[in-house]
Length: 356
Image (tube, rainbow, N blue to C red; front, side, top):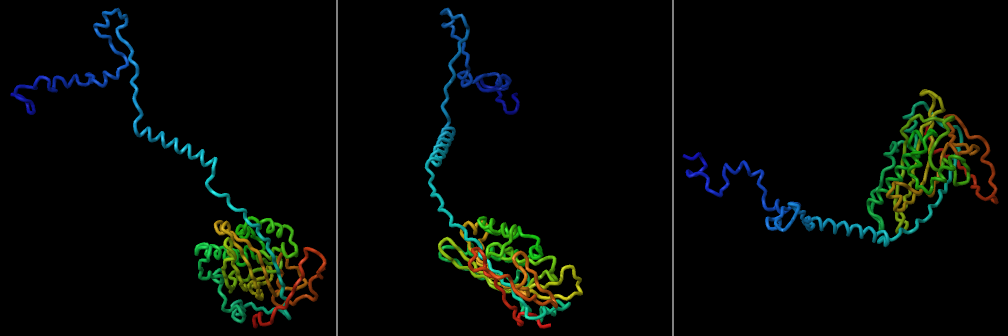
């Protein structure tokens, strides 16, 4: 009786069976035979005086597959496109950029009419001053509600306002800048075409309306005064408008109030307030908006209490509690000399001082 799965009569002749399975691995199919490079001569051919028993067959020629042809075509098209783009550029050359206008700056010292008021009670000093309701630090420089213009989107207007705010915060509120140390934080926000003027202002300060460090940022003479409070009081506005189809302008107008004490003084010494009114005009083209940079074109500063007899070009040298302005004013200005700005000085109104 056959085993399970086998017919009773055994495996039919010609059908694959157990006896042939052991030779299946050494039996060559027809495709293997056709692909062989060596072929034995037939008996008839061997009779016809053939010395070798075998002959070498020419290699089979196989055509490229469809996928290979597609890949070759794609490579050829890409290579041709690259050559075409290199010879004939499809994009227009960008228009030449307008030259950046240099910064025009004015710093006007405001001299007190009498002694500078001061007290050791800082909070009382603020409460009895016009800055009592001012906000502190960057909170005093809020961004206005922005609207798109004819040629600039909402995001571009916001970018211009944000960059202007960053410049204001870094140049007038950063303690490292205010104490005469850090300038790089301000420099990196400027359009590259203004960096030469900026660097020259700090390397060779000059009262020419172009190269005064105090036109770029606020900084006090560290040998004279130090911050009694790092939280500067601020109030002001930011406004954005389109100058033309390629330029946005932002106007900033802020009043800053700093609490100062003599350099090296202790916490028990009297503190006085220093007020600075600053109007800045920024300009932005599309490159500036993309790179988070600004062109500062106008800087107008009024600050006091200062003495008109002292130079405020490189540092602000504030008059502190109990001090009075020196007699005399700045040196005379020759109206016939070129490159020399007219010296200006004002009087700090009594109403701008705290009532202590």
